[in-house]
Amino acid sequence: MRILLTGAAGFIGTHIGEIARERGHEVVQLDMFLQKAHGPGFRPEGFALLDLRSDPLDGILEGIDVVCHQAAMVGNGVDAQDLPDYAEHNDAGTARLLAAMARVGVKDLVLASSMVVYGDGRYTCPTDGDVPPAVRRDDDLEAGRYDPRCPVCGGDITWRQIGEDTPFLPRTSYAASKVAQEHYASAWCTLEDARTIALRYHNVYGPGMPADTPYAGVAAIFRSAIARGEAPKVFEDGQQVRDFVHVRDVARANVLAIEQVRDHPSGLTPYNVASGTTFTIGQMAATLSAAAGGEAPVLTGDYRRFDVRHVVASPDAARRGLGFEAQIGPEEGLAALATDPLRTR
Image (cartoon, rainbow, N blue to C red; front, side):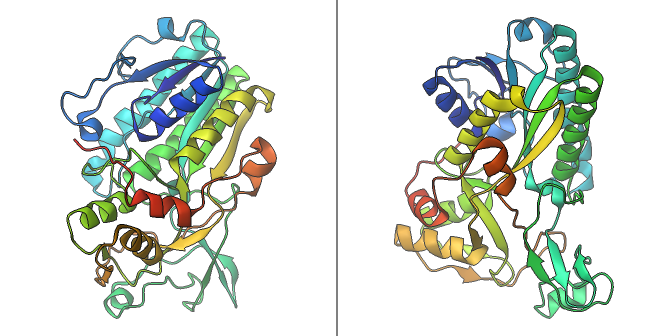
């Protein structure tokens, strides 16, 4: 197949391109080399410089079988002043790409989405059943009660796995832009009788992840602290539950989606891309420290009210729909991250 890969020079895009070529596909690689992600002067060979927001797109789409759209501003986007940047890069860029695909007649898309579309996870209350969490209260957080309460009765709730049918509740600029990307893609599918697979990544880590940019995830932040001889600083009580999925598994999921999107029905089909193994933030920091022979993590008790407490999704739909199962568990992958090379600016 001839694949157009946007964001091809990024952390995940690099691995997708490698695996796709290993499987015999031709990959046309685009990136705008955003300085916030790559730093100044980063321009490796084999990549075309292209800004989805403004550059002509029709010509580069000629002869393309499927688009794998990874390009996006990522990071937290927790300040309201970030909203315009996320809307311009992620949503306007995606809308222009979809319009060009419609003009050229490319009808298959694999879209990088994220578990951030769900916001916090979902919970079960012994009185009120399955519920979204209430907004965490400042007095609870000050007292060290970090788990959210039931939005109905105010009582204790426990987290549960969520599926792809969970309603969107975005909490940040980045999350809102990912929701919008999915909605634009869904509308494009309806208008063009086209197909999209939206892959909702969970916490991605692995070799080549950015170390010191706004794009660095918590795993890279801890890894960088250990490399400096410092103890990783863990917010709250370290019991926040996540699913950490290795970048090679995420890349494999993308290539499986590229190869199978044409067999999916018209419309948007979402899949959670997760390892299926839960890990707490504290466990992750301890695993990294132990593997690197570093200082034990320190629980700071610091918090941000808007942070997600627990979010864990079921990988069952991706197993059924794509034949995807993670091959690298977090115990193995996070231990390897202690010495994996990171991307520095």
